[in-house]
Length: 202
Image 1 (cartoon, rainbow, N blue to C red):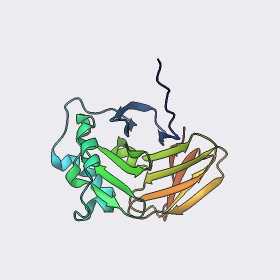
Image 2 (cartoon, rainbow, N blue to C red):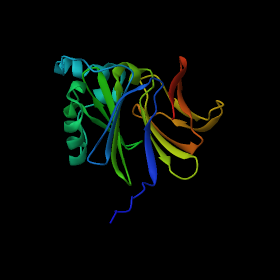
Image 3 (cartoon, helix red, strand yellow):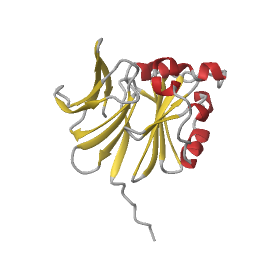
């Protein structure tokens, strides 16, 4: 007798302009998506290199605060070794409910919702360009919630539809933002230097 397929109520996807290079699911809840580039074949770099993203993200330069939960520690351990993720360097942003985790030329954002922990990763360069975010899409309707990363200097985030119209907006706090709206196709960041384009939603 076949077991019924249990449908998830929401679908997660990476918000990134570049093509997806790697995707895998760990323990049914943590989703890793790496975009823009490929990991180094030499494996994890030195700790100094691993923490390089902190140069553009004030949150990562903060002293340790809240300790990562066990499920986040486990997810980081199961991430591809080439990312060189440093759980000791992870910092929590209460304003968005997200964690930033630095790596060896890579960076991840993780957040928890009703379905568990989700984590999305991209190269440090992509994160600095505003192309790292985690999106949860409703399986019914066109709603989505985007939790994204913003480098130092970006103060506002906007979610836009396919035509470029803003459907949701909000302030950047602690290098992160959380936006919810319908028909989100991409996001953009803005600050004193102008508008920084970010990712596509599909």
